[in-house]
Image (cartoon, rainbow over all chains, first blue to last red; front, side):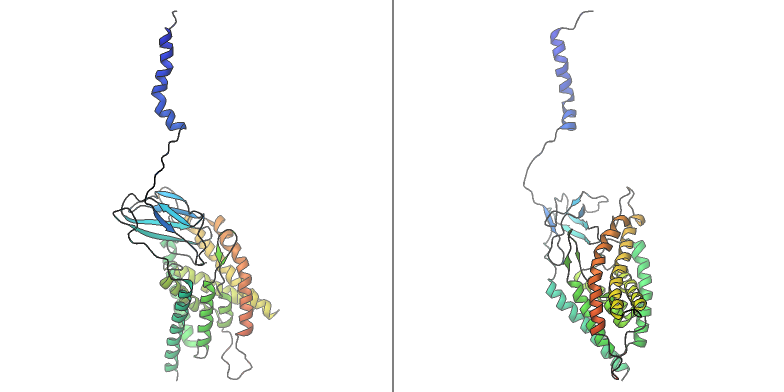
Length: 150
Length: 222
């Protein structure tokens, strides 16, 4: 039997390598790009200002059944995601001990949050408001009872 | 310890609303029948104290925060039903005004902390009162906190069993009992000590003196 000519022997592996190159790249390589982009940043803190760090989070797009992103909050308690469509995005963060939140984040046509949400009332404001409302309610009840039972 | 919105499925919070509504009705009837105008200011002050104490969070190792709740204090001083109503009012304000604890989770928070916690507190107090008054007060505070935490851990851990998406992922709170029981109950074994001390101090300083002719009635029967 005659052996294959040398050029054919050399060309065959090169041809096979060319054919399988995309597959090989997918299997073993990992390209990456680096770019700046405008992200939606949701920052979560406990009442005392401590960050809600390294807790489970998931981001679900508007009218989406499944989350588009799952992971954990970062050290500063942030969930960061890039919206690819406007609408109400759902951000859910959960700690194993029951702390957490289920938030709706409206995203505008520019794919950025439509209106930034400021932090809620500070703790002193909450304290004064809550105590005032409680005393007000109990005061009204006391008045009603004193009128009923002179 | 307050469960927020979105963590409990309707299979949980709808029956809980029914149960809590019945309990609120019973509590209000007893309040109208038994509570006098002299007790109300004391109840207001202790309820406001419980509200303030719940706002003071203490960070624990591992990243979580805890707070005392004053469940035992309220239950020992005013009885189960008044404590239940007062704590329910606090949870309602926290949910509506500040978003602390959910509106859908309100009945579960109220039943777990307000009713079960108060029942456990009064039960522990009655059990130990013949032995030692201070120990009974301490046990009331501790038991109220730990019982509440246990019930909440149980309800949270039940959610993955009740509601799942077609792909099997949990729709609401995702962690089961193996996670919630240690994560919720263990820190509250420690918090319970603070609540026990609080109940002891409150029982010693704030309980009415039966020897005084003008004094209002003592801790009410549950």
